[in-house]
Image 1: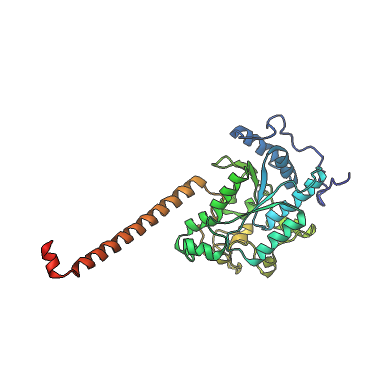
Image 2 (image 1 turned 90 degrees about the horizontal axis):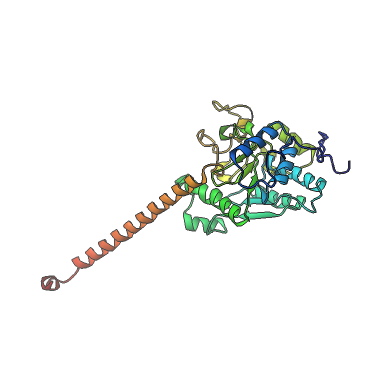
Length: 322
């Protein structure tokens, strides 16, 4: 069958997926918990290509959010092949790329190259009120990730993502998370709905790093040049290091893949994209109000100091007349 093979596993893109049509509506809009549970049961043992096809067929306004890590790139390649075999005139799922302004140059180059290679429309979003690193630091201060890491995560990742979803009317997104990466990802379902109502699809949740890299190599998928230098998981340049091979207590297998992210910070495994948006926004706004109040207090104190200094410098006669 022409265009039916997705890769060497002989998956037929026209073959029926484990049936969910009788229990899960199409399109899937504002799904109930029972509908999501039914979808997860049906897709529990499905191959990533089957999950992606299900998502394309069921979720309107579907996007892939990616920073072009290996898992996201594998999904991108799979969607490209599916788009062709399902008869789409172009790449079926547009991309959302968050330019944090602190990506490695290699990541930015890969984003441009991959979107061009696959003919995938890419929507690029940046932090609010900033189009460059210099602008960001002028507005929010230098090395904000050290001064206030949670505000940094909100500004460079969470807020731009939420803005993208709202402006693009996204109802669902494809992510690059895998259970084998450990941490908060260890128990992710195939299909989930976050606190904002956004449907998240984790098509490679069941795959290991080895399986993902094997797919990349077998299908000639472009990947970040930093991987050939020893990096295994790549984020912003200031929070990404090469794993040094040192064993981390409680971390083994594929979980060590992300050991170079926030090195030495065992308590941190996510950048905020998959945390509760409303809690992060409330926390950011609270800190913002506190900073603004502190700035007003400083300004008021300076004004009072200046007034006191001015009064002390008045001529003695003038003071007596008051």
